[in-house]
Image (cartoon, rainbow, N blue to C red; front, side, top):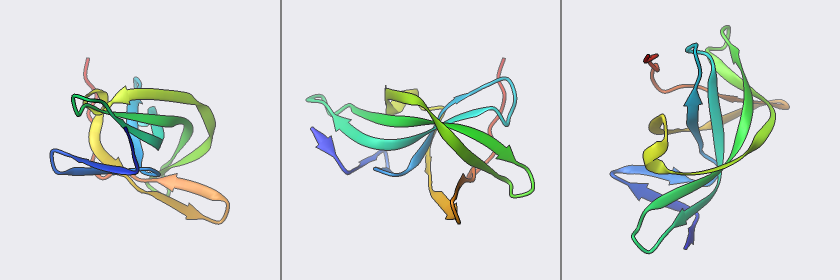
Length: 107
């Protein structure tokens, strides 16, 4: 079943929200995905279909800007790097996202 929004363990996910899909070797190497479709199967498992974004860290704004699309990805919410969805901010023709809290490097 396709949904416009869903709440999982008290966290709301909506089409248009941004989620963190992956983190690279540095704290600023983050792969973001814009939620385009939310799917729920018969077992009530939730999957997000996201448009992967190419991002650039903007230290002066303490934000990341989106520079293009890298592809599409479908994954269960359990596979997200961070369960907290993020909001998109637009300023002129630029699109930005800010982290709600810091991420840690593991490994």
